[in-house]
Length: 374
Image (cartoon, rainbow, N blue to C red; front, side, top):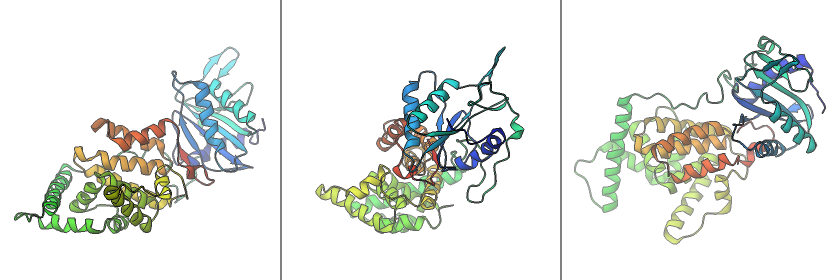
């Protein structure tokens, strides 16, 4: 094992881990893939439960690190609420067995070990020392502030909660969805409702060009009016249109047009969706624009917060996929749990959940420069 960083450097390294991860991990193991002396992002996984197959856990963790382009070394940091075990012969750090297994496998695969550290309620230490000594947490510098990263003081669950929305706003969206559904039902039957809400009629016109509607939403993701929110809810509740929205938000307007045409052709003629479009859903292909995905996630979260309970699974699942596409599997799992509380059989949510459980992440998150929260 080649230890590049000494104790003082290790403290400084711990100070930048939250910035690399985008949060301050808790009850986690963070693996940092290195190329030469540079760390490229961070992967977070939950500490293993007692019932977890440790060999499988270690294989999966190191397998994920090995997939990051150009990786030739790794650092491991454990964040735990467990206290070290104090014995007459010294201290035993929490998770020693799993860390030893992680490091052994990394070395077997030809990876150098940069460092292996443990942060506990009593302080921090290194697994690489035969007689580890606890050092005070005060030695760890405050994470550097960077505008593009933002506040990293919260843990991996920070930011997953939906925006707080008042009951009156939810009721307005609920009524708008009912009015819009009435207008669309009358249009389908060729009828004209004498009491149709003019705002609902205007909202129905947004659906005449769905790709343009989805694209325009990216320009104003915050505080969408009730009828615009209702129009998007109506789309997301229909898988063919929901899939178009997600694919377009992950790519661009022309791809959204192609995806919509493919969905309509499939509905009418049974024609399949082109591979390059379908592969995006599985996390394959060119890396999406992270800023574009983040804006789309803001839209999905805002719509989910305002939706009637029965209509929430669709925007929550959209938020889950967008989070997964951004490498935020912890947040994705949070939204999927919310879906399961309402509709345990929601198909796309079940698919995304199975991918997360199998530690399947988008291919683009393994390219250098991307952060992964597993």
